[in-house]
Length: 264
Image (tube, rainbow, N blue to C red):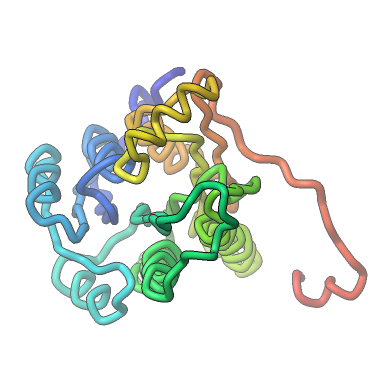
C-alpha cells in the first residue's frame, strides 16, 4: 500500500479534531494528520491515553463526551475553530449472551442508548459543531469512521451494524446536500474491515484468525484518513481490507420517480 503521507500536499495551517483519539484508529489518524503538518486536538474520555497521544502529535488533548452537545460547543469555543474533523469515536454493544442466542435478547436499554449516543449522535453533533466555521471559511473536511458493517450485514451485533449504516447514510446524504449548494465541504466515510482496536476482544481476534481474515493495523486506516482529506471524494466510502488496496465503494443507483423531488 502506498502511503498518502508521502503526498506533496501539506496539511499545514489546518486545525483538526479527532474524536476517540486516545487509541486505535483515532490515535493512528491523529498521528498521520500531524505528520502532514496539521494542528491536532485529540478528543476522548480516556484522559491519560489521550494526553499521551496529544504529546506524540505536539497537539492538545480535550476530554469530550461526543454524545453531549454542550460539551461539543465548549470544545469548539475553547479549542476551535476546526476546518478538519475526524469523527471516529465508536463502541459496540458489548452484549453478554450465549453465542447461540439471537442478538437483542440480552441487550439492555443502557447499552443501546450508549452505542447510539457515541456512534450516531457523536457524528451528527460533531459535524453540526464544526460546520459554522467551515461555512464561514468557505471549505472544510469531515471524515467519519463507519465500518464494513456499514455496508454489509453483521449478524453478531445488529445494533452496531445499524449505527454504522447510519453513518454511511448520513455521509452520502449530507455530502449531496453540500454539493447541491455549491459548498466546498467534503464529507467522507472510512469503512475498515476487522481492525486491531480496543473493540476487538482477545476471543474476537482469535475468531478472526480462525476464519482466515487478516487483521488491519490501525495505522493502515489512519493513512486512508489522510488520503481522503487529500483526494476529497465527497460522499465516498473507503473500503479498507487487509491485504487489499483501499477503494471507494460503488453503489447501484436507485431513483424511483416519486423520489426525484427529494434529491434535486
